[in-house]
Image 1 (cartoon, one colour):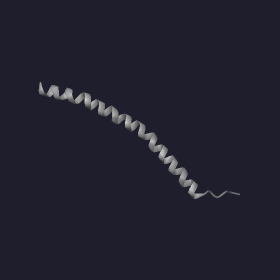
Image 2 (cartoon, rainbow, N blue to C red):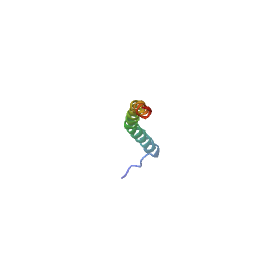
Image 3 (spheres, rainbow, N blue to C red):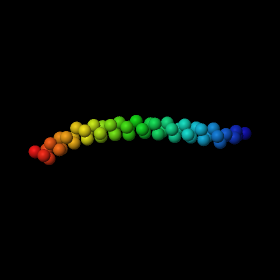
Image 4 (cartoon, helix red, strand yellow):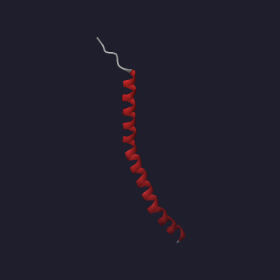
Amino acid sequence: MQRKQNPEREIDINMYFDYNLKQFYNVPRSWASKMFMTGCVISFPIAITFYIT
């Protein structure tokens, strides 16, 4: 005999999984964004200096 799954519980589990997945992908994205901005802050003044001189 199979038990019927509660559809509300299935939705809750899917929402929880989806939220965790988004948080998991947020970490590398924020790290990459921070590294990109750091690179721009360092590279932009150097590029301007070389362009002017």
